[in-house]
Image (cartoon, rainbow, N blue to C red):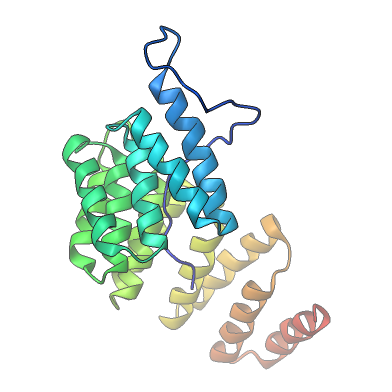
Length: 236
């Protein structure tokens, strides 16, 4: 099952000098310096170089201690290395300073869901969605849906996946998860239509074919089940 998303849109910065800064220089821009360090830090984090990741993310905070993206990146680092209490403190610092920032609200919700606090996580996802200038609504709805699944609330998950697709009809993960839930609820026609549209957009995929095989088996259509099984077998 797809994990919840840490939302921090990063533009990787190339050929940027980030050393030997002079903060008294009028041209010094702390946010730009922090962004460069964030890009480096996240890059190292994805490569598994935790030492370099922490070094750069700490320097991002040195440049701009109250910058929410630096705070979220450092919290994300703490999560990755298993320092849960440090991550929570950093998230709460960001939340205290930026209580109406959709990214902060969403990412704290993601953190809480991972800790098993599903009810609180849901509140933060919805708070993010409600912010007037927050544009990553589909991501927060999908996170809310995934968290609802973890909590065992399939009806709420269906609602959130539907809202995700209202905002982003081509979000593949939500399409597949929603189709799976529809199949489980016996809504075969709706699931079939959804998966056909998925194939029109993305071509035949193993996860979607497996869902169709399951759908037609439950719907009592062995010939269609065999057709989809044959297509899946050809994919290896």
